Image (cartoon, rainbow, N blue to C red; front, side, top):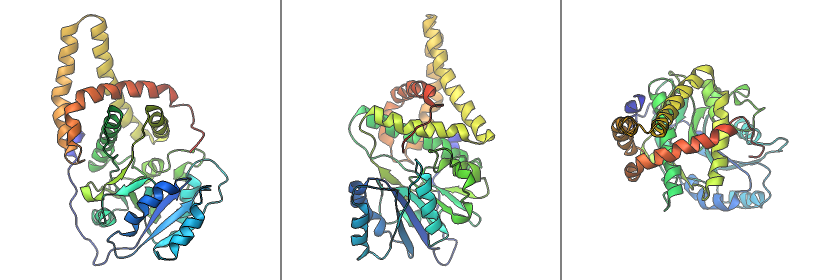
Length: 337
């Protein structure tokens, strides 16, 4: 299993000086949550960086608040996006075009780094030829089954794309915690005709085994609040699943193989139960757990989510039915950011 290949990254400073970085955050009507998070980005222990804020046509007083904050915070750069089309890509391009520095770090307005070493941890993980750094963006712990499931799927997805990257087959990244060099940016790779896939479509098109690395040290994590309703989470994941339909052929085959094997297992178990072959159904399921459960629990230590280990069998079943619900919506385009 490729999941066994995922290991903690090791810091190595490759330059006598840290390269300057533009931290880009696109905001649309999220002033309240960003006011709580901005201090954490402004207090990064990093020699030279700017916090570049792109106002994506907000109507909640963001502009006046930012200009007031800029009076005492020299790191802040602010740009207003003249929004003419739905989605985030236009704002993202505005930020990249106006960035002062060649290295670009991306996150969202509702995200919070674990501490002041987030940016330094990300930048320290790269090797000489690396131009893309894939980070991990978990969700905050809260009570309740929905929160457990959201954090479980976040771990599951991260385990997939970070493991693939570690064996030399990167195919996506999370825009909530992503760094790349400006030379990687390609407007065509964004597929601007689609309003989703702001980060993973670019990474899918531009990443390879020679220019991409992972950073999964706990100090590099960026947290955000999970959705409080399943419908809200369903809509959020809908956009991400739909983007995967536009991956390159090799990535699509990798994901198709994985999801077919995963769904095939549970469909086989259900079919055997329907046929009242309880022995074969239980044997197949137990064999699956004996192989996958220890691996998943071991990797949860890296993601600082050991508490989820106990719930693995139950949450994986929920995940199966969640995927079944998502499947019919893959070909329906989401019309709002």
